[in-house]
Amino acid sequence: MNKAMYVDGAYQDDYSSFLIPHSSFFIVLGLFIIGFTVFLPSIWAQTADDLASALARAQESRKKAGDFEGNSYFPSEWEAAEDQYTQAGLMRDDIGNAIRAYNEAADAFDRLSGLAIMLYAQAREDEIMAIRDYLITLGARTEFPEYLLDADRTAVQAFTRYEAKDYYSARDSAVKALQQYNVLETAFDAWLLWVEIQDRGFAGYDPGNFELGGKIISGAMEAYIAGDLAGARQKAEEALSTYDLALSTAWASYAELRSSLAEGERLAALDMKSNIAAREFFQIADSDNKTALDLLESKQYEDAAKLFINAEAMFGIAGIMTLEKKRTAAEAIKNANEKIRESDIIVRNAETNNKGGIK
Image (cartoon, rainbow, N blue to C red; front, side, top):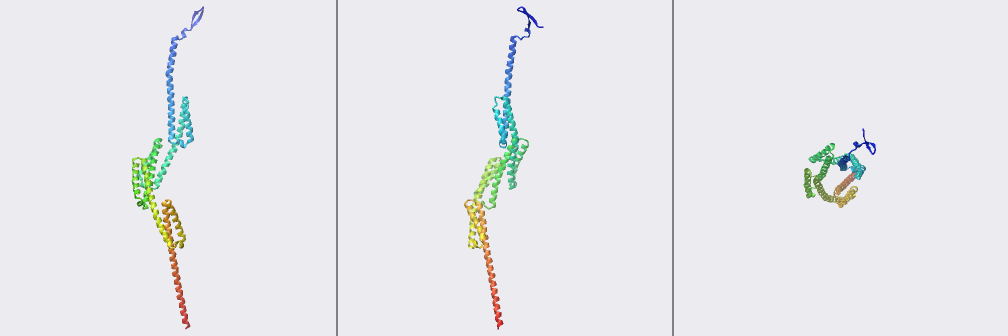
């Protein structure tokens, strides 16, 4: 029960026991303020950390989507995710919404990279298999077995890492495998030119470049084995160019030779009047020869040489046909003369018999 106090001639209830002394009130208030000021920075620090984490996640997701060409495969989806990312950056003063926006942008980039990675992997596989099939078709498994096997191992490694969802390592292995196959493709093309030069007997037309090409391609394969794929590719391309020059030089000289031979056959055919006796064959030969001369003039030596060979053959055939016609004609004349002689003998015998009968 409250105590009563007699104040100014009247009794009043005494609540003094329920009141906090003035000194105690200020102490409580001070403690509250101190606690709040200590707790508030921790809240702000936690919020700033969350924002930094959301930003880092969005940046990482964005990089991954770009690394696997998501912007090329899905341009509209990339643009939408980019817009989300940009808008999040404009909300830095609104930390809560900025965190939410960065996380949403990260989710969008993650979905994009999930789709892009499959297409990226398929594209690299298609490129690798196209070159490998080309090499296999032309005989690289027989001629370059150890080099091809090394590239195949790298390609299998890329596939294994992709299956394990180790996408960046898979990408690196796929890029290396593609580089290896590119080196082998160029080196094998150079080797094919070497074979052609040998098979056609062209090595003597440009022996300097022919020998130089061999040295360069050896250096290319040494670099390939050492893992210097950029250097190997450069040397392989240089070897290819060197062999191509040697082959072009050979074709130029060979075309001149075939031109002379075709001209000789043409003159021989004209001497035999083949342009008259075997007009059809001579006209075909003459047409090929004129076209070959035009090709020679425009430095299309290989095509020119091949047409000169055709012209030479057709001039020869025209000459043979002319000789055959002459032989046939001579045989016909001979047969005709024999028949004339036989007829003459028969006539003379008949005349002789008639004279005998008159006696």
